Amino acid sequence: MLSAIKPYPQNTIRICNDMVRTILFEDNKNLRESLSLYLAGSEGIFLTGSYPDASDAVKIVKQQKPDVILMDIEMPGISGIQATIDIKKAVPDAKILIQTVFEADDKVFQALCVGANGYILKNPDPEKYVQAIKEVHAGGSHLSPSIAAKVLSMFKNQLVQNQDTFIELTPREKDVLSCLVKGMSYKMIADSCGISYTTVNSHMKHIYEKLHVNSAPEAVAKALKLRLV
Image (cartoon, rainbow, N blue to C red; front, side, top):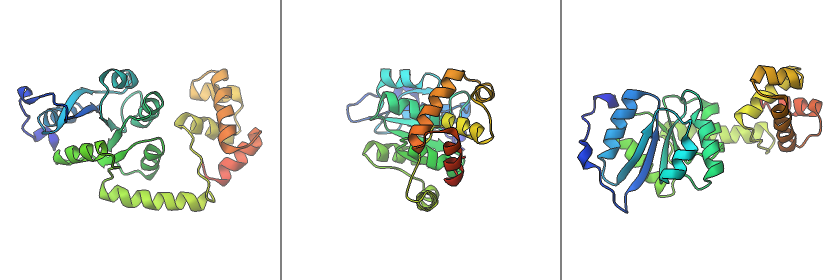
């Protein structure tokens, strides 16, 4: 694994105009430290920082202005998917490479739909990270081979199931919609999701707009028809 890789000395870090400025968000300490040291010593890469969670991701990205953000999909607090959504809203041109040990179809599809520029499986060969980072920086959309096949299949299935219609809901909107399908009132949804009644109402407004409906029953019917929850 990466933790067994001999780290590069810190004095190899150099700032060059042609280097790809990179930020790493990874909650696994051993992986984060090992990968950080490798990237810091890699030709063409300048690691501006590494972090165990994405709680301040937007602030960090705005301050450090990275070319590529290497984002773990599963982290405590804010997930990599939610962090991607937040970063893309604040910095639309940000290039984000999602990394994970999983190949879960729903997460792959969701990450790409919210704006991720690539998806890499955590790999014992750190050079694959360097290649993926440079590929994304160059304007490509890096996908590990096994994931590329899944993505193609998922997009085809999505079009068939949704009758050529794709509905992009945020994770929280899906939670709210799922509660609505279960017959919960706005107050019950607020309690279940740990949010305010006003926030539930705001989410429902966005859900109605995205589903092109005007009532809760219509939203439930369409959610079930399109298998959104």
